[in-house]
Image 1 (cartoon, rainbow, N blue to C red):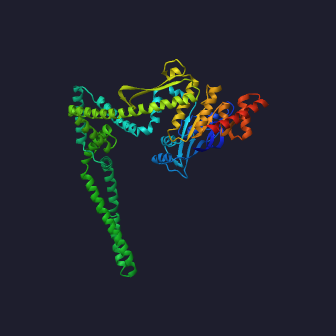
Image 2: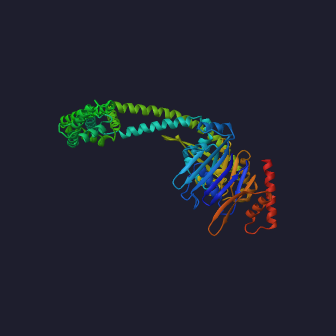
Image 3: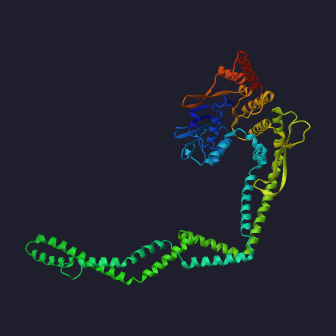
Length: 561
């Protein structure tokens, strides 16, 4: 269940921290106090979309953080399957928003938002405002039935999805390459021409870089030779003022001096080494200049090869690897186009096999859905009766389609007759806005009994209801809260009276600052808040008495649920 909510710098919230209890948690407050911001922060924390103005004005970031307890072995196994380990049977989920990016974390480790959504799906289910409108669409009906039938489905739907994905790719491949004979022959001719160009070029990895270096050297050969020649004229020619000549003269002098002082021998040895180094340098520089003079004809060849390499890369890929990959694709496509009829027959055979597999799996899925839909139909009908639908008729129609879809060959639609004597009609035609809210609550109540979700959040599910119907909704939610943690935003006293923990959301405003706060009410404060909901602007002693009585009646009723 959800143990703690921590929000900072989000919309009109400076910072709040709330510890939730098990059972029924009800949040109430004046219109505009920020109730939906609280639920919105929870929704964002589990991967929901964040509005552009999520960060409070003047703040550098916004933070929404949730601490969950992992209540069942199944939840723990699900989390471990998605690579998440629990710490003391707890999971900490957070999303931090800055002006440039969002950071998602589970137990302190950064994760993609997709992982965040997957991980929290087994921990919490948020029913947002107007979510009941999704009941107007058949896709939602399919989703509800499949969620109910998940255990019975035993992975058949997952296998079907894999096969369907492969099937669609084969269909797309067939349709994309279904070309006229004349066009196919033109394509073959063009591909052969391109492949011949690439193969004749015979690119080598790293060749362009070495060619560029060689071209740079050869194109500047004259400057290099002139420069080296000038150096040689200073170091190694026969002129009298060269370094070699001066070293030779110095060696003759120092040779005579050694006769007078043995210590001068060390200088003679050093000078001899220098003379040897200069001689080696002169031989090397002479050899290098001779080689460059013989390579001058290579410049044109190098330039021609470099231009070819660059041309091939410009046309077929920025690197040699990409050019080779393109050539491999050409060879593979050429093979298909040359043996087109055989290729097409092979593709059709693969499609046929996938269709056979889809047919088998979709039949299995349909059988599971029909079996589970009968039970679900009955349970939802009973739940609707609990929510003050008198003599309601509810059915789940499963129709067979003539084509394969991502969900098999079934089309599912919820049908309803809310009043005696009326025929069953699609739910969107038979139910009002308030009735849709109750139908969604009935669906949530039934599904809650068949999955591992510990926490259910309802944001104003009481919209459009009052009187006895409101009381029935309150009792149903209290019943759900006996088995799951429920967190509910409500405007109805009947629902607020059922709270095991009642929180008041308040907004404080100053000349330049507005902030939302939330706090847990004690016994008398709960009665006072109920009185405010019941009495409106003026709260009299009789209203407070009625509120106290309503709270006592709710407590007695919960004992008997």
